[in-house]
Image 1 (cartoon, rainbow, N blue to C red):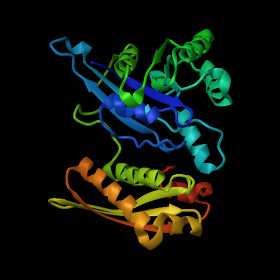
Image 2 (cartoon, helix red, strand yellow; image 1 turned 120 degrees about the vertical axis):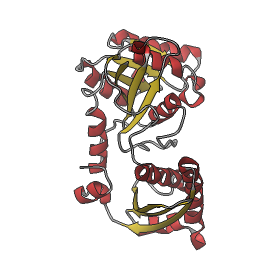
Image 3 (cartoon, rainbow, N blue to C red; image 1 turned 90 degrees about the vertical axis):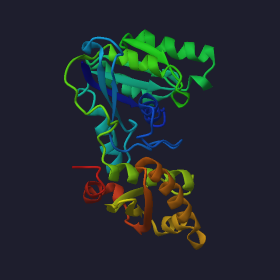
Length: 300
């Protein structure tokens, strides 16, 4: 068997988590149109057995989805950027995702400058090609090809699953003989409690639109599995009293909608009925608190 690790990096909101979900064929990472949706590194495990072939054509790739690399404005932002950059030297290949020309913004240039200093093989993926016309794609392709630091350059539409197989094949080319790191029947090592908290946070981001910034965190306080029911209690933390009122909504309707949407997705994930309780609490400036970041699982 061939096996190894691949890091998925890029600016916020370029489609890193969407690509990971497309590779695995199921959702393990939350996705929204809002930047910095991903806060933790998430490992997705892709295992494929070659039909009727020798064992050395079997493959397991551990894809590591990282937070968007950006200029930090608080300690949470520092953690997210450090977590992403920290994967550079820990993987066998780096997948750098972009959705625009290099000349149109400093974010990708910042990442490229770091990648120049890294010897790890690099694959460039131009995402969202369903929204890019051929001339624009050629411009993006040409700018990055001229750098001479990428082993291959591919175009995808991760949300549609277009050319995702080509990305997997390109990554597989860098895998070497090695062990099976994880059982072949799992797609992520992240515990259910973590995934549940992320689903709730995703619904918050979707329901709140631009009313509440990214100053929300979710902590699962209780997770109890019974025969045909899973009981979950979660606390939603926000940074201001005004935000608490917005999350709850008039007559509690907003929070009920968030809870219902989250519960339905959690039930589909777990395959059981779910009783979900949610509360909202204020914890001012938690994104700049080392203690809060540790409690919420953003730091060891």
